[in-house]
Every structure is written in C-alpha cells, then in structure tokens.
Length: 81
Length: 478
Image (cartoon, rainbow over all chains, first blue to last red; front, side, top):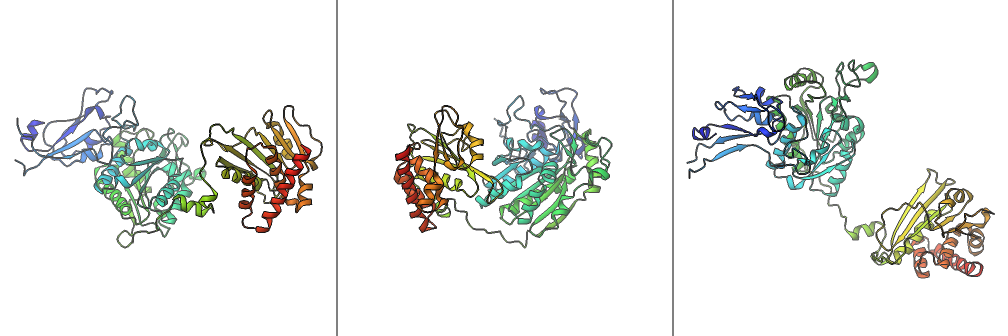
C-alpha cells in the first residue's frame, strides 16, 4: 500500500475479515485487478484480493460490494505536499 | 516521521455504523445478509445519501419484516421495526407527529406488495411524506424462498416448484405502475442494483427520493430490483444476469414520475401533543382531572360491570373511573362490546390503583355488577374469593358461588321510583359507595356524575338523587 501511496496511485483497502466471497467486486473491476484468494479468512470465506497494481480509483468494487465495511478506496490527492 | 499523504477515501457511508453492536454475535462488523445479497448494496446507497444530505438526525428508518428486519442494526439514525407490511402506517404516524422527520420505509416484496399492499397504496394516495425503498427480488427471502407477488411467470420457488403458473397464482405485481395511477406521489422510479452501471443509476434515484424528504415535498417510491442468490440458487454472476435479463423484462426500469421540481413543500402545521391540548381535546379541564398520586398503600380494586347494551354499564364504569380520577388514583376503563348499538351484551373493566396500571383487563374482579342474567352466568365464577356481586333483583334467585357475597339490589325499582329506570346503573354506584369497596368518597362520586352528564344538566340532579336513594337503601338493607 505504501508503494501505491508513494506513486500517488489509487488503491483499494480490502478488509478481508468482512469479505464473504460473493465475487461481485471482481466482476465489477474494469481493470481486472481484483482476484479471489486461495486461502480463507477467519470466518471461513475466501476473500477478494488486490493484485497490487492498476487500480484507477473508480470505486466500482466499493459500490457493488454488499458489505459496508469490506472495501475502501484510497485516492491520493495530487495537490498535497 | 514521514508525513502521511492526503487521501480521499471512499468507504463506509456516514449513515451506517462503523460496527454493529445491536447485532452482536461472532461477527459484529459484518451484516447478517448472505454473500451477494442486494440489501447491503442498497443500505450503503441510503447510508451515503443520509450523510451527504445531512439528514441523519431527522431520519426515522422503518425496518420491515423480511431479511431486512434488522436494518436497524446498521443505520445510524432513528429506527423502528414494525409488523409485517405496516411500515406505511407507522411511517404516517411518525411523519404526522414529527413534521420535520425524514421517514424512510424499507420494505421487501412480500412485506410491501402482499400483506402490506393496502397500506402501501393508501399511504401513496395520501401523499405521505416518506421515502419508500421497495426491494424486489421476486422471492420471500427470510422465510426460505417462497413465491412472492413479484415472482416471475415460470420462476421456480419452493412453493411453486414447477414455476409460477398464472392459472393458479396470477401475474407479477408491478408496483411502480400501480402507484403511478395515483395523483399524490411526487416521485416514482424503478432501478436495479444488478451490476455497477445499474448501481450508479440507483444511487441517483435513492438520493432524489431523500432530497424530496429533506425538502418535505411528499411521497417518493423507489423500486429496486435486487438479488437473492441464496434462495434463487444462483452465484453472484447468475444473480446479476437474472436481474438484467429476466426481471427487467417483466419490470422495466424507468422513471415513472418526477414532480420534485414543481412540487412545493407539503405543510400541514405543527402537531400539538401538549398536556393542555390533549385535555382540551378530551374535555378534561386540568382542575377536574388532577394528576394521579403514587400511593402504594392503596389496595388496587378491580371492577367488572356487565349487562345488555343500553343498560348503561359502560357509562357506569366510566363514572366510576371518573370518581377514581377525582380521588387522584390511577384508573383504567376498558370496554368490551359487540357490534350492536342496542340489545347485545357489553361489559367494561375498571381498575382503580395507587400505582401505574399494567393491564386494564380484569379477569378476576373484586366487584362484579351484573345487570342481567347472562352477565351473572358469564362472570359470577370469575369473582375473587371474598369479592362482591351486585346484581339486579329482577334477575331472581341465583346460586352465588361460595366465599363470594351476593347482593340482590332492586336497582330498576329504586331508579324508577326516584326518577328513571334508566338510572339503574347509578343505583349500583350508590351501593358501591355505601359498601366502601372502592375507597372513594361521596364527593368523588357526585363530581363524577356531574362530569358524566355534563352535556345534560337535567340528568345530573336526577342521577344525584338516585345515588342518594341507593346509599339510603344500602344502609337500611345491607
């Protein structure tokens, strides 16, 4: 994440505990940079993962996600120091 | 230490809680919804609009019966959860009592279009100030996937396993189209949350409906075609396709109406629920109905009065309750009667207490007043041990239960001789006064009679005379 911050690129923060593996975000991502995990979270679900590159901050994944606390989109502000 | 770069964060909407302590359990930060369910998506859209429009503190969210029964776990605003289909009725009450409230009814297809259909249409027709979010996923979710009013023709559910057959179950109900026949609604739109492009449009409709509430303009209805992967046995991609390709065919997406620009705020004036206004409304001048005083030493009295309709048992009970009010006791009066204005049986329960009354229902009276034989037959066995039964002597011989004192009162006769047979009920009050069973004073009773007959001055003196005659009779004969 700090890499993305440094590059001033948007990135999703996925709270993997809250993911229920419905996969809606993966379909909704126009850049195809989300994928389903191999492993399981504490509640026994697979979870969406960011491949680490290519997020444009469109927030499609956020809006299509049914879990209010599962995804955040961080968009670095260009004007900041 | 490196300075943290400024970021814009798109995340949890301000209208939803950061965690859900009302839900509790093992996963207090996750919703109770299934994977891929549309409810969470719609909750987020509403939660976002609540915060962005700055209306959280004015908002009362009404949770339905259905999967969203626990919507109040999530929304950071005023919350109610109501009986199945009754959100528009409760919402009407909230909206009328709190003119400034933003009322939201969140309802599913079973709740809104089946059991609540009448209330839905009536509230829409009255143009109530509320936003209705109608979540249509063609199936009863919470109860396990039964056919709903909006189930598609041929769609399989557990109660139409061969697919919905219109020869037996008719056709899907189109709620937007039905409501669009009414004059009052300000806004009607059908949207979908099947996929992201639809969600973006739904977001605008949700916001619009809530802007109309913010501005107090009236009724807004948003139908949201939604997913139910669990009950429809779909994965999330199949559920998206089902909504886009099958539901949309039956329920075309459209803005059916948007009169928000030309509609003025609906002003109904302030509702006044002050003590003064209620007293005035019910003719209760404050001096004549002083507040009840807590008195734990007072032994609660339960009275049941029963007779034919027209014998004045309800008004006798009311007079007794008035007398209790005058003595600053807590009282309740609870009538029970048939549909007939005359000739049926009726009874009422009166409780007089030194403390707040839990239930106005009297199952085992201390005093039973029976004006006719059927009343004795019905209630004599319920009277408490050591209790009293006052019955009109015209009923004749009666086998009074053991441990209960039965007193045959010539109520008709005394009343007839003193003024009018119709005042037989007042005779029973006089006997109660004389026996001291209610611990109320002569003055309490006299004032109560004056209140009961305040509209008919002549009857006050008549009934006061009857009361005194009854007291005299009781002193001489009991």
